[in-house]
Length: 487
Image 1 (cartoon, one colour):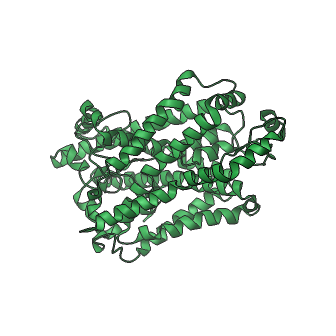
Image 2 (tube, helix red, strand yellow):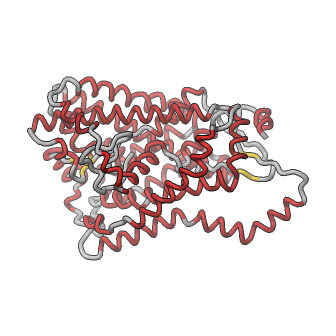
Image 3 (cartoon, one colour):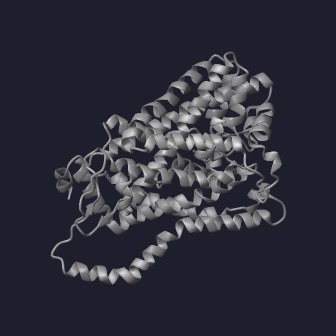
């Protein structure tokens, strides 16, 4: 997806010359505007296998993964007429001078948000049975639209100037920390490690599913989609710069999103504008639904695994999972909602997700053990991870994540949030933000300390009374025989 508003832009596999950062868009808010961890338990006791629905086939499973990891990236851009419509008519942000004065609710956006969350519930109310059917539409339609837009873009004048700007590298930017941070956050939001969705979707798959090929396919499709989207976007920017006789970089220098400002301006200036505009916003809607109902299903899966009584009323439980985020999103539907989005974009995700993934890596490869983990993978897939993956997971990835996480504190500048208000408002906002970020990450070390202080001795005493130690995972399968074979 994206990163925060710094001074660099990260395009997958490319470092663009004189580029600027990708602006993260909360997918719930983006979808609303367009229309107007799963918990894997590893214990030392034989757990009773829990029955769970399965994907109808592997293709649906892969499409669900691809639908989650593939998202439109919101670049920074500006444009006069569409900018004014987006800011003053759609968001009415001119009525909110700062985050301290959010203003009143935008009832049009509230209504659109209700429609979006209703569609999310309809997509997940029966679990993977309904999600698997919806994914055929929400995952495949965006590719058809992208191809149509690409073919139309190739017929426009001036596209090569935009494509040149897209692919021209600037290797000197590799020495800047913000570029690497942008790249890391881009990968987190694009592929989704640490959010629990991939674990949740995998838990509905066959125990012996080839996880290596699934991960490879999802990563390659996501990368190719990013390149395809970048080609479509920068071809359009080249046409717009040619039409307005301006520099391409002019459209990547403001805080407005490319998706809702500049690209609609491009579409309105070409022949067949209504047709292509409708296709474009249908694509945005389907992409947003893909990501959001994936997240909602993963939340339900994690909660129902921890509290099995909720699984007795799955439809009601899923309704609550959808209702709570809707209520939490209401502040973003006010006149000052964009400040809330920017606030949650930076503090609610970027530092926290790096810490969560770092903890997952440490717990898996150091506490559980890379050898035991590799043996589990061999049991399920028939082969162990290669030496490259073992070294990367054990040393390289944790080191990189630790450096990036520490640097996110060192490089932080509260003036970045000066748009939230004057005086000490930006500083107060940053303090509140880091507090929220800490709340989302502190439960991990707090629980670890509690377990070491109060549970470790009881755990060791319990193990001494057992002749053997058995490690299992709660894995849904098509039958208990397969589960028992894994154990």
